[in-house]
Length: 321
Image 1 (cartoon, helix red, strand yellow):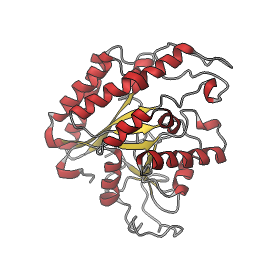
Image 2 (cartoon, helix red, strand yellow):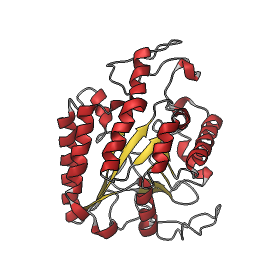
Image 3 (tube, helix red, strand yellow):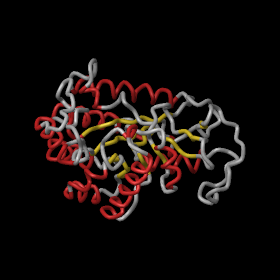
Image 4 (spheres, one colour):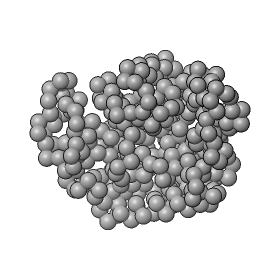
């Protein structure tokens, strides 16, 4: 059965997506303006033109929203994973400095650009992955160990595995627990993300209307998962946040939920995705695959009892238990 440290029932991970500065814009050499994930209803890309309203909304994330979220989590000494776009880091040294100061935060790769890699050729995507690693090494003195491309191509996971330095990727929404992808020579850890417990739903039809909606959904989700954990089925929960959407009423919901989560004490482990990866690798590495720290590259993994095609959660339960 899956378990978490110190008997916790739920592993709770907050993700701050730092994308501002890596979005589409003709000033960045793109052929159109950004159109996604903003407070402009039904926004469409402007071909060959700037969208000044869209640019100012993204500026809000860098100028105000990031710092509001930063204050919420640092005040409460809560760990966070940041999905950081490489170009966005290059364009905001102040944010980089703030991230480097938070030693209990994790900065994961969110690609070099905040764009759809489905239409990007393999060599360009590989180069973007490497470039983002180099940015992290230059800015933070260490490489990222997790990657969430967000809008991945069919090549993304293979490129991540071939790079050999990532502990996990999060380009999946397939489970309430981490699981092992078995398509490659060695098991590769996938830590699923979420599009439901995510403030992006403030920008979607039938999404959140206000902060109360957001807080209520997060509380109901955590309450149910804790009950499942107490019944013997531990789970993880991700909460997705975006700096440009961190307006005061919405951010208040984040603070309220974080305090609510803390009220569960040891039943809720608030952690980074890297901590989840380390725990899962140490405790739920697939049987028969050897020690992940000593398995030599290029050595095929023995045949395993895989519960789903290409997938193994590493536990003795079913994939969703």
